[in-house]
Image (cartoon, rainbow, N blue to C red; front, top):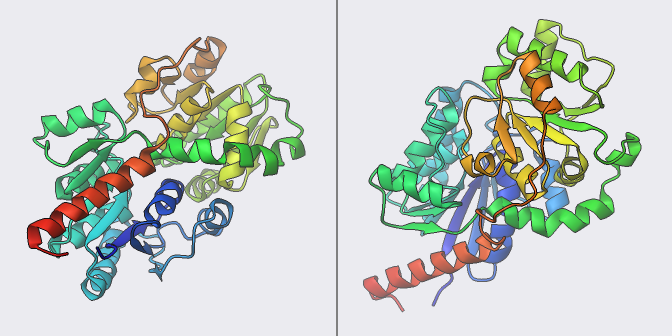
Length: 365
């Protein structure tokens, strides 16, 4: 049997992390073409992940850059469609919930190329988030839907999607398990910053609801300044832009950093007293590394982390953040709700079975 030709679409930091384990698993049985949209194009948001994680150079780089959601998605859609028309893969794989995800899914489905969605079924139930629209539409375009939890399967079932749904666990758990030891061997940032384990906080803020509101961003930074330990704060380009626009300065205990690579992120996250974030991926990474998390948002796509007490939702109010940390309790146990860290292997087996079935139905040897 010929190896299937599969196009995998990536474009943003979380997708690079998810892509590495699946690339490694799929390469043994498939011909893979990797298309990088360039949604994240800064060297510290893109190139460093390819270097650290051993991801091979993409076959296609679209370099779309940043713009409004409509402009960015439209440009991606046009360029991805041209590539898919020329290459005609048997399957297109997309990850997560970015504009790259939606553009890839739409381009493929309009060309009647099957779509596989890794991290399907997530819902925040907040349609003001562009990511929520992206993930809903992508799920409804997809033929193979790989859910990280039973909650994801339930969401899809409620929307009438029951065929082609597979529980495989969270592929980011694969990455944490694979790179954790390497991270501790190679990362030096914690020592460079002279930070003792569990004597600092780790923070990331980049959602428009927090960065595009002067009062929210001011309250968050002010809360960081009132904490009892240093706050390591990798600053997303969007956040840096708004901090400058609002003329918000950092308190003395806040240690701003350029965006970090994956290995530094793992070590700083694991050894922190707690993490403060509005990121989706960081909530899970904190869960896997057993670091308490405060999510500065009104909702989460990962309710299992809340249910088990490792994560809690808080408002972007100064006193709320300070009080939540002062009352912080670390759970004594953790249930493995996101699989066993073998998602990439499961996804590969399902895709190959799907491919064999398709060939058999078409009478292809």
